[in-house]
Length: 492
Image 1 (cartoon, rainbow, N blue to C red):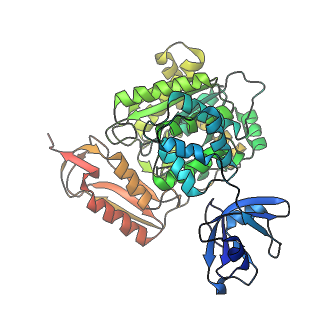
Image 2 (image 1 turned 180 degrees about the vertical axis):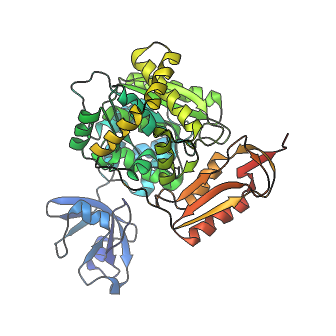
């Protein structure tokens, strides 16, 4: 049918179809398709008779891909089997605790595409808001690991990783940390997700610089050559249920606590990591709003990690304002390159944060304290060794790409004077997403100010990058409707 429904399989049948009448199928019915020894559960859409020839079904692109079906193949259509595990979701709706076996059955069914998007959304919703207990989070993490592949590193008994829980625009420290610590010999096979609720994820940003859709054998080759990688985890079937859940989380703009922990740690365990640091930014408009919430989350991370056989160290950091200047895949990539190349205009807050997180990994690995570890990280960056290592990584993953340019850009100037007292991280991220990030890699914005900057009328505040005038207008209308994105106080 030529219809892109992303990852949701849809089947289209005529309203006069004798199969629909005989089986009692209606729009939104769940049906099972069988063809050439493969089968797929899909949601039915009813179309006008003129849309399809008689005795034909149409499929969305993902349906065609999963069934490996060709035009003219004979398709058998039945009622979809009852998804027994959904009764456990209903059990959770009423506040009951799920057992390990119930969680396992839910994740297995989601991984095998038996849940509709609505059903996945229901599961995510009833698990959000501290509705999952510690044992349930452990069970969810282990179930998500069991549903996919696992990498192993025969010659390395200690494998490192790093993750930030997000909520801080521009905080693209991961590529910097990977370059620094792997230049010193630590093994860090980094597999990252794409953006969930942010204008860019590490995989989105790295995809503007090099190839990230690496199969397992290529990840193993890159790590063997360089000691690291910066790949998209979804390409290698590591915790595949997580990628299906993330797609619905993105649509709902939802990132529940228990699901967050299971998502992060299942990917780390599946990637073969043994030592993981987790950056938890805290701020009034960050994902985590208070130090108490951060400490609670950190405690869960450590406990779930221990139960699953990995060591986790959480670092609670300042999340009161954006990090770096670029927001969106390409603009964040520019910041990464500027820091590694030690360019004069490189964002110093991003540099400091990357050095701090690298130091924690060095201390985790070798001890000796953070001061000594920070000196080591700084020396690797300032000597150029981190940039050389990053170049090796890019070359091993397919070579360095040329960053694309957005078709349109517009600089917004200040209509007031004073000192910037605060920036709303969530609204700033929303502004970049309305500009088209991360779907359009070159879309987003570049900050010319941050908290503490002195403004006078006419000063440049940010430059917006879009692929269309419509998106530019849409984003700027949002900016004008939300003057509290940038809050100024009295100068002096």
